[in-house]
Length: 300
Ligand SMILES: [Ca+2]
Ligand SMILES: [Ca+2]
Ligand SMILES: [Ca+2]
Ligand SMILES: [Ca+2]
Image 1: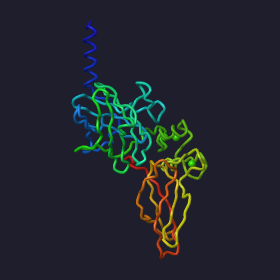
Image 2 (image 1 turned 120 degrees about the vertical axis):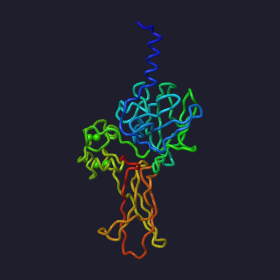
Image 3 (image 1 turned 90 degrees about the vertical axis):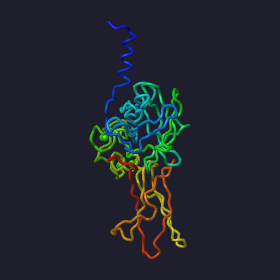
């Protein structure tokens, strides 16, 4: 029988050189995939399509590769509550997409695990974040053993091409994470359901980021006013900082709808409504307005 120390050494070697379990395709761009650590050097966020990082709309998974120090896991890919890692136990750890900053960037918060140098903390001081227009990551994360690690900001950068929606085990096209977050189960919401009876399907409420259990929350224009002298209209609509909106106009409800001039814009941070001003065509007998919504960085 081998002495215990030899067995332990073998196990450590095995852990250091074994590939982690492959998951879905990495979301990280093949060219913009580099993270910098003063002590570790360049870190590869997409060492391969199968083993690279997957940045999620709810939680992250996949891995980073440190040439000098091995694999870093962004999470188990299966948070216990279905939508966010608790980071309270060693089996329920990972990096979550945790809301939005005032500048509209998405917040990455939680714990990543490096087999060879321990926990990496995604926290408020370093403010690791995602630009929802470009997918670029920025900010810093902290490792007690190796110091600050920088996401972007140097000669090379790291960006995600999409935000992963995670599992859809019941096949209704509504991410299971959102179903569990909103209702605690997978059965209340369904592709052709309207659980709260507000006239907007559960699936469309997912796209709009509105509450599928609240009949008073749906995508709608809340108020509209216009100034005849300045020919400017003020339009206010329900919004979510995690969605993009396009105000469109038409002179007749039957005509093609066109961009009212603002382009796609994010929902206001820390608010359930967005207010914008648009020019009115002074020659038109009438103008109609509508608001469209889309998910930023949609999965391929
Ligand atoms: Ca589902
Ligand atoms: Ca469902
Ligand atoms: Ca509804
Ligand atoms: Ca609703």
